[in-house]
Image (cartoon, rainbow, N blue to C red; front, side, top):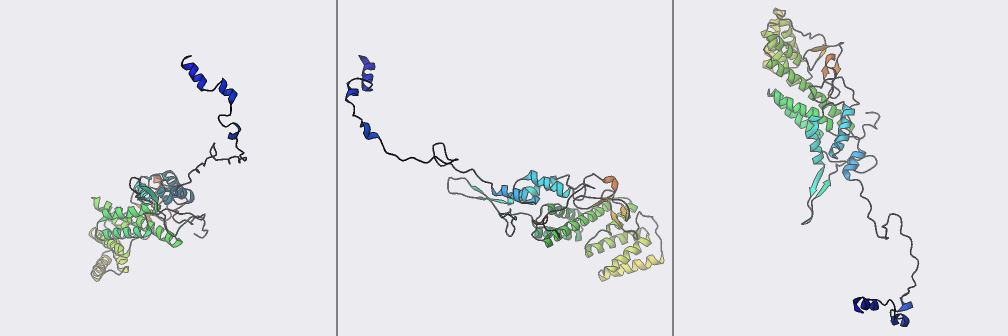
Length: 365
């Protein structure tokens, strides 16, 4: 009796119900089903569809397929980008490149708004007309050759206006940005290297002039003015440097040096009023030859400027150059940070600037 007996009877575990049978259909519940194939490997344990694993993102492809450091920074792969720059350019200080690297990473992606109540999508932006040999895409870059040329013009304008500190900022920007600028032809490679050289020469020249203005020693002022005239500048700026050096030398009664500057100035065909002044100086200096103050300067012996000591390195003397920008230094500065580009190592080793996708495979580069 009781609840247990009632549940036992309801469960049909024994008794008269078992003898009668057939209440649930019996053999009618059997089905004639064909054999099913065994689920393929990779499917779910119960034979359900298994989603494929996610592939590489566009940024992952950029970092994998490109030999250019700029593309690695655009992909957000900063470690591989910095390793490339250290190997290719011998850089020992990458801090100045941080704003350029962040601009590349940000400029290679955009944000697309989705439908209401859905998150925005991060979209990779590809550049046109350039792809790796195996196909695919490469990132859009925020640095370009025309942009650097425009910045160079701003440096020229500041130099002409005597704004030397401002001009140094412009030329150093170009000098550093060249390391992360990509071009699409061999001609572009040559133009980029020319920009690098021009920016280096102007950076050296303007630092000489700033040092001259800070010096209070007349002899040192005259020397720095003389060195300034031996930097490779545009003709208009070369004339300004020669006129300045001629004036400084003449006021010191260094007539031989002043006459030399006057001749070089006249060779550049300056404006009539400047040419007239130079001819008068030349005539007076030839009538009174000699230098009142001996200078560490010999205009007949070719030289380059040591960017650390601001003294001449005459032809045939030992010197070291920056691994990146090629600025000249005396041997005792080897291993130091270049103070022109603020990135390369004096006397350091480097394989060279790589700024063109097929540069490493084109044998006639």
